Image (cartoon, rainbow over all chains, first blue to last red; front, side, top):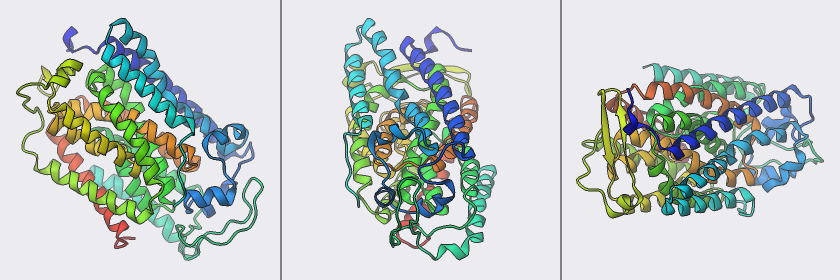
Length: 139
Length: 333
């Protein structure tokens, strides 16, 4: 049996709430878009039956050979079955940034300066990673 | 026994499918007509041999294997990635680049699925996770960029050696269920990294705090780099550092580690996603499987005993580490 001492903090519960909704929404979108993908209703960038020919390639070779997009280049291709799945994947990948933005006002209100600074820094770090500005050379 | 049976069943499915496709394995893949403006090209000598099994065999096998891994990952306080990457990389026909990209998303999804429950039950601590996550997630970006530039054999060898090292540490630890923290350090005190949680297996409230926080944060730089480099969730290292070094109770360490993965892996996953190392046909079945498995695992974790969790993590990591090391050395291909 829990008591007030063992209960989670306000920001912790807020984080959990947003995380829960976002997780279910992202999962639902992924399942729906995946079934659209495998059903063949939409054309795919790489035909599903051809995938076994390419998924053994290094990613650099895959991209070069198929002229596959990198960064946010997939966004204009969401009309294609495979890249349609990226909507749900991007949602789940971006959910943490949203959670931090939700708890930031709570931390500010509590005057928890150290954690406000840390949370802002984290938002910036994750946004940089998501931006597509960071490039890697092929090996 | 159930875990060993489940893993054996899943990998046997993949192995039999590969066996059925044996005539096709000798040939390197060639690109013929890609789906969007393609052209013919020469075979790639460094690629994984192509399987001629029906394409749907692999997504189905991935779903089964990752569902089981999802349950085991929560109980063990590790991301699904540490088990996913060597097992899928070892027994499925996908290149390690795509396996690592999927592994990070798999670990991320498992953490996202387990996170709400662990946070609400106050088993995962936001105050402990947030400072650590900043360090680890920043380092993971660098690790991901390094990892995508290294060859597969180097990655597998380093990954295997690292996991085996962690297994040794965890197996030789003398006390970890409720570590004694004589005095919290100045940094943890100033940040208010402490808490109280309900230990259901003992039926009492347990107060906890941490020490050696600066050293712990320094180690999380290394952990973050390795997580991004190997496509792992970093739970394999999070738990020992939080528990053995910083002195957080094992259950708090396991739960906070699981939650922490959702932040660390987000940064690394974006790097892999932006480099194109994400294939939905690999990611989605794996991700759905592990998310469903993780939800089951959360319900079991609150009632489990710390000692049982510790030894299960050790067993799982030993298997995963050996497989990766031997693959990297081309002994067990």
